[in-house]
Image (spheres, helix red, strand yellow):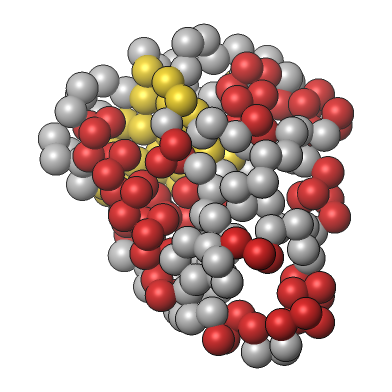
Length: 193
């Protein structure tokens, strides 16, 4: 089966460079207007969406009906760093704040969720989604797309996000019957409405 991961549209906090995480920020007016002009790259009988408003608004703007809300598609929880910009985090917690939070899968923002925990919940979602066997669309967040990409490719996350992963486009994975992902297509253009 194929599953297309789509990131939510722009929010005011995206523009300001603020960490959103689990903070429930809606799409900006511009973001909502932009998403209304786009559609997923293919139709699928199943749609999954993060419970956060920005993802649900994106699914609705895409015209996706009856999405299944799944909390495993939420963004990584960034703890007390949510609402802050990177410079604010460094000012508040020191220039080595990100290093002290850990590297790669061990990264854990203060009071938040580790990257490994995010990967584990996305892997659980993939296992469950594969059981039906029919194609699907998942509207989620940057962290979820990165986790899905990592699970499919083995990217070690010790290097910057691969340049070829364009989060403004669809990431399409192929799932086997156990939910093990493989990369099907990168950077699939969204369709014009």
